[in-house]
Length: 468
Image (cartoon, rainbow, N blue to C red):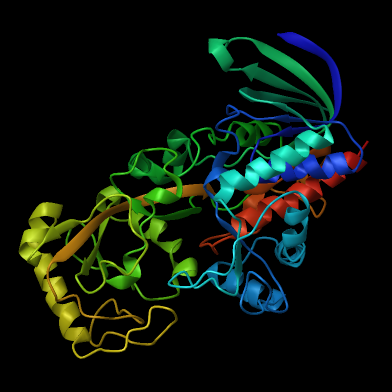
């Protein structure tokens, strides 16, 4: 192992939203910063490359949102998904979210005007112009001007911790096939912002069994939990349910890794969802899509072979965001069942029962909870219950698309990693997905992941800078 003669004030492990925010905050505090990104320069940013917006609290309409979204409303929305393990950190995240638009603008991020339609986010979320890749490029340009050092293709394999204090990172350079050479890089503090373990299907299999083999990973294949496992082995305290994650409906034909937003399917509220047995198993209209969409990944994960099918007809096929892959099409339910290879008898019966229970329903308004529901149908559909009865009929195969896992590192109110005795390590900090389990217990609110990363990235970077 080579030993670097350099000594950096703050080392940041990771290259996404949480990591770059930590690096910027530490640099603003006057410290030297080295950011170690496992990906190449072209692929930097991990899951952040696939983001589009953030959910932030604000007290009045602004140039990007058409109404207020108070801290109280934000917290209520979060708690309805699942009570946070640390309510104080949840409140802190929401309170600090108010400052993010200004911070992001000051560091080069541009915004687009208000959006309308079926996303239901006109008053809760801001959309950055060009998406996550453009946002990262803005941040990195600013960071470069500020003198932050980056190393790409830098896989951190271990952290040297002595007497509860970080000393150095063991780094392997993966560029040009130089996979065996490692280097010891020293620092006075470390911020670990290296994501969760969703790309480690073997680790997921410890909790999900063989079902994990059928999961699709929406983001980077690099989030395999190396840093999380390393710190847990060194005595860090875990938090969060290892079976809980942010997972949505994605097309079953999508690539195994890194498909991002393009593979997402938004057809669920517009029709019905059935499993391989041809049966419905959940209310497709329980809540607006930016809140309900993250329930469906886990629901499908619990079905036989981890697959389900969204069924719509000619009335609604063009009502949702265009999918990457075309739908399977048929002129009858029997024909569609044969194409999808689902139980035809059950499927035809399911659709007959559903259509009887929605007969006469009119005035469906997908823009809000309209109360147009089924009658005498189990499970019910409580909103947007429009009959699926005008051919041709369309089917989309869906699998769980995992974005990130919730089990992670327990942190305190200064973003310090806490050990199993509930004592913080002296100079080890965490931000982003690797500590999201402090706030997210189950379910998801669209745009909150980016907020957790930015808020705790800035907190961790600032605290790391002041720890020396």
